[in-house]
Length: 276
Image (cartoon, rainbow, N blue to C red):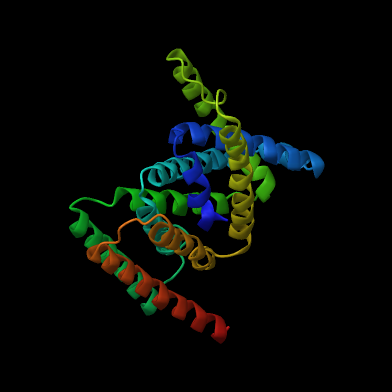
């Protein structure tokens, strides 16, 4: 689902990214609230509400994933899907580093080689662009940290996501009021097709996040990172073959280093799995 997000959000390129973000948060809040009602699971939300530490972590997770959404939407609207796919290719390696630094997970020699190749890829991207690849780095860092924050909260996927979107709404409300002063409507005044797509954006935002939150509670971060390769691969194919974004030779070297790092890491993980 995440891999095909560029195809969906490209249809909303005429809407400012921050407006799309506000609509995503609001409609995801409504959709997940409906699922909680149908499943009669509000007691789990109430249990999480009584634990301030969990609320703080979920609010932090909301800020991280909201920042990630905003940068991604900007990248899609401005023809930078290749850069966004690079960011999500880097995310698994960010997860490895976070597991090492925060969760005290240990890396073997092959995993260190994979991390080194990722660092070399970022350095090559800096040389090619003449600047930091900020889109890729922000996407990788925010989503890696989001996964880490979400892993620390023993709240089920549905309740956690509802609380996360709830934490986003005050900021969205402040922006909506500020925009209204200049006569700009965030939630209304759209053509019927655009309004429908904005509403659907909440649904397609919630479904993969629910799956991701459920996965991070069951799996170690390294395994989650491996599964996340699917998303940037589909984004990369979409950007190059469907959107026709240019792929310079220097950037191709960046991707080659990342792919090699992922291959080395995958081989290490597979070998460890077979031994166990």
